[in-house]
Length: 435
Image 1 (cartoon, rainbow, N blue to C red):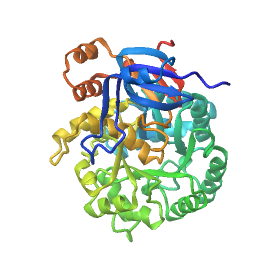
Image 2 (cartoon, rainbow, N blue to C red):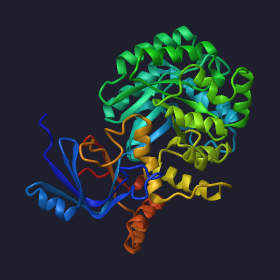
Image 3 (cartoon, rainbow, N blue to C red):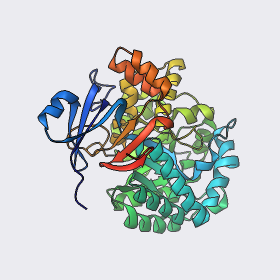
Image 4 (cartoon, rainbow, N blue to C red):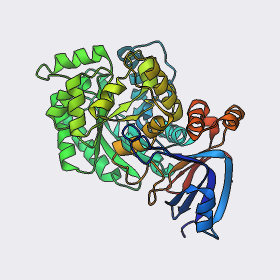
């Protein structure tokens, strides 16, 4: 196929090519902006008039009235949980037993898993998510179904077989030998295939024996390009049980550290109840934490200590969690993060720039993809979401008097209905009204 012709997209443009927690001028924004895309890559980004004048003859797609953001990056989401969103009124362990694990058992049916995978990747794309770190299934055929669905859609997905050998439903357990062999086969088939990455994925230390965590260590050692993901410090009852199961560990993080599972390729979800020594060690290791504010609130897990993480130098990004959360909307997750920090005892007030960073470039950094996606720097893949404002958002945008105000309004009011088009490497993966 010949490469698509160059194109300038004209709209309001926002991106954060720098860390918004470390640099005051991290946000780059253009009320009448231009994004020049050629061969699936960003060739230029800036004010429309000079950009267009510098590239005469390049066709222009006039999207004025709308907003272009980098593709959203979800760093923690469970594919088998599409059908259990909204199971409110439960704590983590109760919710797992009554809602999540019975649904995850259904993934043994490959046809059910394939249909769920199609629903899942469609939901990601239609909400503007172009990159996601995904908990797969406890079943190899279902995890393969997710990878195949993601490849067919064009999304960037890092995922892996979920590994557990105790304290869950028996049908969700594997032996360490089974886990090693199945994971190795999936790595060979899917890791680095197109836009796919493999992530070694023990569910959490509570359901992984020492032998299973040794398998994870072996997989990471044998496959240097894979990622690692798991849960940590989400719920106080969970933390107490992990302490009982691993009496030699000084804290939850020490369990994963013992098996060399904490490093720059690691994304640990939640970390609501971490202690100061854990902040320091996470930062030193270069590991990332996936903050899931809607899930933390819905399950009553607690309020994420964002300030403590940021001040210690821990890399943080956002995740929807999905089943335990409130859906696939990363912009809604931004808003929830903002609201939770406003009421936290030692909360960290968040600017619109910081929220956009958490939902885009920070996620790309966490997944090791910051050289490829996350913002509109020249040379990066043309991953973006075009938002067409609803009447209420359009009315607000007509009255705001600053670019930061525009972005704040978008984060507050934009939702799935605002997502008009989504592209990955310049290829349309979702279009509400195909042009």
